[in-house]
Image (tube, rainbow over all chains, first blue to last red; front, top):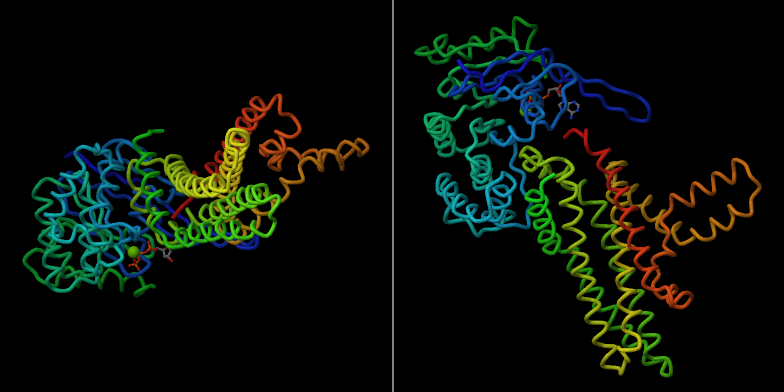
Length: 251
Length: 260
Ligand SMILES: Nc1ncnc2c1ncn2[C@@H]1O[C@H](COP(=O)(O)OP(=O)(O)OP(=O)(O)O)[C@@H](O)[C@H]1O
Ligand SMILES: [Mg+2]
């Protein structure tokens, strides 16, 4: 099985120095994780478990304190292979003085799509996330739902192989939730590998092939879907038990 | 380093800064200032064109300079705070490309602003009967060197904003260096008169650190060295390029390993 992402012994300690005093916070501790091509991998864990930290380390927004990350057999950071990753952040962040389509052209260009092709590609992804009729709207006039769709569109614009979604279903209404779930499944069927984090275990259970349980910066357990399939609510039980056995819900 | 990454970044920074209201207010303010200098000059009847030229050139420089300092110190910090840089840096855009794209995009916006103000100002002067054939060269050289000061001070602003991670302290540092730059000649003179020793070395060091704005005053250069005007303007341009490149390099060194 070819591994798309391989995380080895990854540790991140946040260091802050303020007026000469250094404070250190554990972000993640000795994480190991392999993700195979075509997999949907979910990361679950209480607040502060280290999910976002892990994703940011992969994306190069943070530098690891220790350990290595390999993406398609290239050691990160590597600016060429990162082109094969699409990222959906926890909250959509866009420059506000631009329209929806302008934002997409911009990210498309920065993802290596030539000027002559970027418009056609932007139209494609806008159709995919059902935003075609809103493409001339300014970002600052978009609703939260529209921003979420735009956020998804920018992650897909360059047709990446690996998608990294940080809490893609948090804060969506039932319709949006349903759409996002279907989107993840469809994208996966079209060959994309997906790594996402979430708090909503009942959803993770429906979508993911494998799940990593994080707590206190550690990867406590990895489970595969045959350990919970056909038993609704079982993943949640395992999760709660695991966290409790480690001394309760930490924040 | 890829131009195909720097150019779109620069273009979007350019467009974005034109669309931000602050910039429009400043352009409007510039127009008003130029118009009022036009009115003021009516008072000094004899030297009307002289006064109008001086006032106009000074306002263009100061206004564009403060706009650029303000934009530059906020440029990256704002994107860090609003996290808009996440979606840029997680693509195949290097940190250096990101900095340069933002820097040149903002400079291009300021440049467009300077060109607009200059056209307006020169138009008013011509209307007043200004002899462009006699005065034009020094006038446009003077706008050019004003822009060089902006290029240089902008690079400093960018560096300080990344280094100090606070817009206010970046503003203070940049303006402090900008002011000290006007005393570069005095610093050199002072260093020359001191006895050899720590103090002399200190003054000499500061002299080399502060921007040498005396290389970038086209009108003073014209008055004192008109025969070597072209060469001295070229030297000033080289100086600007080197100083700005050094400031950008420092900005890059403090940005390279930053985490978000
Ligand atoms: N920039 C930072 N500086 C210092 N500490 C941080 C920083 N970001 C995160 N941390 C700490 O690292 C730990 C892991 O945080 P992280 O954001 O990765 O958790 P998470 O699992 O994504 O949580 P949530 O579910 O709330 O999003 C927490 O203890 C957090 O306080
Ligand atoms: Mg998080």
